[in-house]
Image 1 (cartoon, rainbow, N blue to C red):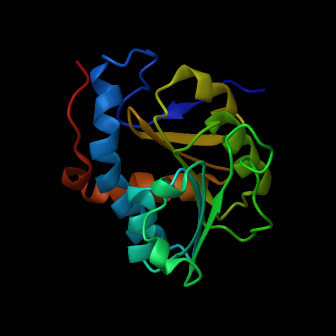
Image 2: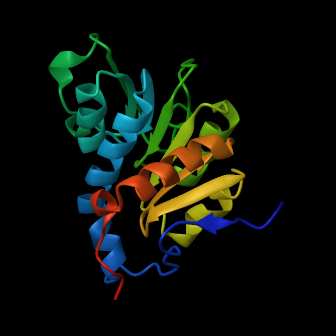
Image 3: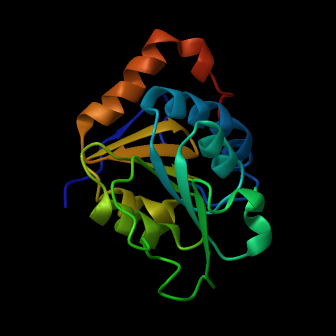
Length: 190
């Protein structure tokens, strides 16, 4: 396996500490970055592990969303289920949790739930050159081995990474960042 070539404005934080400043920034910063990626890619289909704000954003972007959760109360907009929104709820220790539920042709895989390393492996298996895989809390070392499955990984900030089998997808994110750098600014790691 080749060594992972990290790219991006910052190198990933390698700490596991909850006191680390970068760990706390992820929730607030990913919203801005994910909105830009949704605008750039205009996905038709999004598959995510770990629903929440990302679900709402993808639905607002008019994508068909498939989400896997371990609790119903984490699933937003339950009234929209069946209208371009499908939710699967499984206990995290079951094989069904790490499953694609026969969903294919996914544009974006968003991983922000339980068993993220296993979800990354499954997203790698099912993704195409046109897909992009987004990992929240990507600074955690335990996810890096699974990220190495992808030949192209770009840390958008310390806790949010984009991975793809195609350099073109990652290059699109880099180019958008270069065109409008002010939209991507984040706080410095201390």
